[in-house]
Every structure is written in C-alpha cells, then in structure tokens.
Length: 327
Image (cartoon, rainbow, N blue to C red; front, side, top):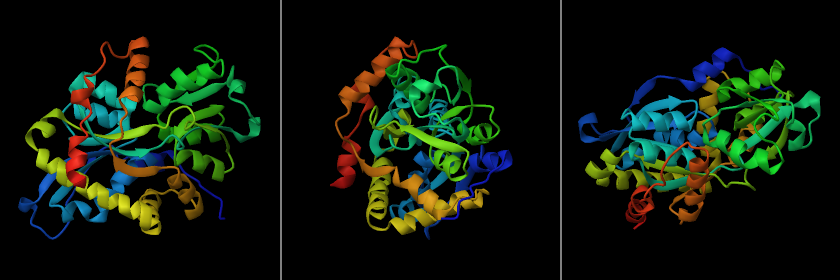
C-alpha cells in the first residue's frame, strides 16, 4: 500500500466548501425537474449523499439538487432549522435537537456509522486504553453527535468526566493537523480523518463507537417540505433505494466516485486506505423501529439541559414515506 496521506489546512478548507453549489442532473429541462436543496457533510457520513447526487438517480426520478456542503451534520441541521436547506443527514442527537428547535422530520434511516466514529491518539504516545486520556488534550467537536457520544457515553464508561481531560473544541477537518503538530494528544473524529492519521503515521486507532452506539444516520426533511411536497420525498427515497443497490452490488463504482471527491480536494490518500474508511459506513436505507433508542438519546439531552422536552415520535419519525418508496 502506498502510505502517505498528506494534507494542509488549505486543503481541508477546500474540502469543506462552505458555500453552496448548484448542480443539475439529467436530460430533462431544469423547469421540468423538481429541485431539492440538499445538505451534506464532507466527512464520510455525507458521502452516500454525495454519491446520490452524482449517480444520476435523482434525475431518473425527476429531481435535481442544489448542494450545500459543510464539515459536519450538526451544521446541516442548523441550516435546516433556519430554512436554508430542505434535506440533510445526521445522527440521532442532532436530529432530536433539530426537531425540538425547528420541527424537522425523519423520513428514513440511511446508514449506520458507529464504526466510523473513533478515538485516534498520537502514535508517539503509545496510548492503549481510553483511561489513559486522563490529563490529556482531546480534540472534540463539542455539540456534534460524535462529540455528545464521547462526552455522555464513552468517557464516563471509562471513568472519565469533565475536568479529567482537557477538551479542545475543534472542527473535525483541523484535527489531524493538530495531532500531527502535537497540539492535541487525541481526537474524537469520523472517517476519513482517522484513516488519514493512521496511514500518515501520526495516529493510532484506539476505539470505535459501534459497541456503545450503532449511530443510525437519519435523512431529515423540513416540516414545510413534508407538508407541501410529500410526492417529492417519495421520489427522492426511490433514488436512495437505487443508491443502496450500488453500495451492495457495485462497490467499486461507489468507491471510485467518492474517492475522486477527496482527491479533487487535494487529499493524498491511497485507494486502499479510503476503501477501509468507506467500508465502515453501513448503507441500508429503510426505517427500523428506533423509538426506544431515540427516547434514550432524548433523555440524555434533557439530562444535559440541551433540550427541554422529548419530541412527539409519532410526528418526528415518519416511516410512511419509505414504505411508499419501497412499494
């Protein structure tokens, strides 16, 4: 395997593309296609959505997309609450916050990403246990789903509480550079940044989150879209079922499209390292019964005073759209 996975802050900023790109697909005239405003994060969680937009399946179902790329899903959630974006993915805690603050509605569970969320430590420190983070500097995107899981579930499980380590709030796209510069001792991050750190020889893989939280990632829609454009949501989810087939049966095609995204942003990551990162995303659009899981997540947020009330799950979770798409 060719090993080097070098990067610069400029490359990270380019990859996170803070602006929005208008993208139309297919042979239909723009006026004939229903345009959706799609938010997605540029970490590995957002790459199935990126593939959706590049696959041609939206066009197949009479849709076109306007892209809104951000570093992490909690920012997409905030954009949706503000009415800037109509659709976006994020894990349970961020969705709950978005529902309480802005009435966002879950229309599908797109993927499980517990294996992509990881604690990666500086390789030179030879840290082998989570307990060894005591007294260390830990980079974490506080307020994100991964950040909340680390603070509320994982650290306490290993006897670590606020004050036992120095938590440094940091954008995920800057964490590998900070690890390399030795300004932090560990990072709580998601792929592909963990794989990049390991492949570049600056990081060691310590723990993934899957045994604590499978981390289902919801596709959410604004309440306005649910009310006014339900037929568009069904067509949109039909495109997702086509994407799921590619993830299952044409993995090379999927890997090539997504790898090209990172390569175009200046990342030098071997295809093998990238394939490892993407293999940790389990894409299977559907809507399993997650009410008990979401209730638990909501109670944690209430305990931490992040929200004041539990969502009405009968309104927040809408499996009927996916049922229609799969009929």
